[in-house]
Amino acid sequence: MGYEEFTIEGRNAVIEAYRSGREIDKLYVLDGCQDGPVMTIKREAKKKGTLVKFVTKERLDQLSETGKHQGVIACAAAYAYAEVGDMLEAAKRKGEAPFLFLLDNIEDPHNLGAIIRTANLSGAHGVIIPKNRAVGLTATVAKTSAGAVNYTPVARVTNLARTIEDLKKEGIWFVCADMGGTVMYDLDLKGPIGLVIGSEGEGVGRLTKEKCDMAAAIPMQGDIDSLNASVAAGVLAYEIVRQRLKG
Image (cartoon, rainbow, N blue to C red):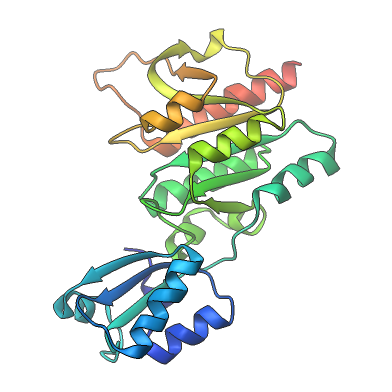
């Protein structure tokens, strides 16, 4: 699951984590539990937009490292999240056109880590992920990124499609990976750009895809029909790099 090294167990520990401002990715709560401390935790989770899953005692016991979960286990981020605005400011300071990665429903921590690594090496100013149905900055992600998570900011947003709309107002164009799109070599990918990558199973979601200005297809000649999400991100990112360098 990728969260094991960063679980917070017990009602008081979880409450204190929220009060201290610790970023919580996901909260597991014993189904049906309605006592005071648990209700306080659920209120904090709602205020912070934390994904809450109601599970059986058996499931909590499986997730617990200490056996003293008291009906609540929180999964904390290994690294702090950035703000989208910070990424735009970083591009401005460098005198560069913004280049962002936006990831739709990437749930595999190895894929997220590899994409963050690619984002760093391709000169992207940041990575944006959704809060729900996506892996967060876990220990596995950090390890797979080979240290890139220390240099490339990652922001979490409630609604990816709405974030694209907001960033369009900043002059950014968006291209999503889509097998049914235009071959990437035939697209103009220069200037301020957001690269949108979906999960291997589902691809980019319909609502997110509708907000994109272009859909890019990677030419393939083999016997299977898709690339690993992190590999697809790398191929498209370096076509963007090639075009930016070419001017």
